[in-house]
Image (spheres, rainbow, N blue to C red):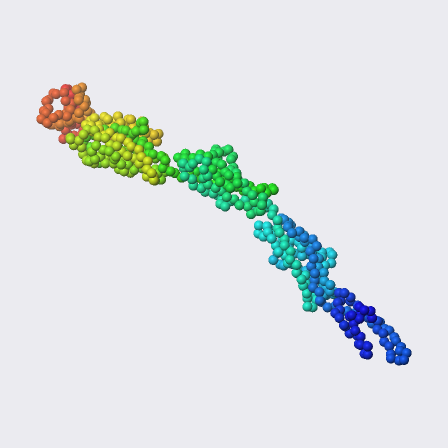
Length: 514
């Protein structure tokens, strides 16, 4: 045996037993051919030689080996299923079942090992779509296991990064946005802000903002708005006025910097909040040169509770800012006049006496209920006149007030007047029909040329079988009736006669005899 054989095998010189002297490795050599020489002990020993072939039987003493021959550490998230990520090569020095390898990857990942056409080669491929926004990094464990008994296995870990593609549009934190801005804001100051985010990465998530300006009549207000393209802060270039603009809306667009870029828009609703920036305006008495003054004439004989006038005012603000209260700031006699603090009505508190002044001055304060209330004053001059003068003044004043009424009041008056005329005509027709049915004659008032306009007076008297009615101007107590006077006399038929007996005589001295 050569030296190599002598290191591995040993033979008993007396018995010829061949034993293993050192560790034998199948993977180094699976068969040995040993030359054995045998000799006797004669004076001239004789020898013979024989070759012995020793075959090594394999045992599963080698674990599989894994090698990554090709690998892409980053894969786009829009890769289709079946995209190759890496090529895996496995090897086992054992033979037979001991060298048969099964290769797998951990199951909680969207990757799978696919056998290649070449023996002991596998491809690591995607088995489902990837989404970087859900998971951007995977740690893959590749396991190679042989079929020996007991089986041996080995593992190899690789890391795969999912690279971003611009597949997400910017998303606003609210949709729609609703903002409340107090009127009188400082021009050029930021009034509100919008914010959008993008789930993509790097430039794909870099957002810029702009306001949609379509030039329409409803969006003219957007010409007074500017937006910071980087952070979404919106600046108003002018102050808002609640009385002229109460609400408006516009669109803001957020665009990312991806290729191609994606965008989304949001509606912004803005409500202007009222401030107490308008003082009450006096409607009556009529304002003139910043002051309001009116003159009211009332009869001296009115009773307590008589409505003198009503101070009318309005406030352009709303809510508490526009809620008006009336108060008497100055009055010549507090015992004569009272003012309703909510309606502005001025009424008498008592009847007037002969000692009361003929003219009274009332200064009414009208103020709103704002945190810092604003106010206006009105002056009402009340003149006491005799009843006849008051009636004439009332007619003139009514005519003047009619001119101030609006169209609605004018049409209402026409309607009411028409209804009244129709009603009056109906009454007259009914009276005429009723009078035409009666069998008695009625007298018509015959006005004398010297009639002074006072009411008529009638006196009835009887002479023989006739009855007389004297119709004439109202006479004072103690007046006498003189036969043959110019008074109009209506002679009535005697009802004791039969209904058919009616005699008519000529008219003498304004007397009618029947």
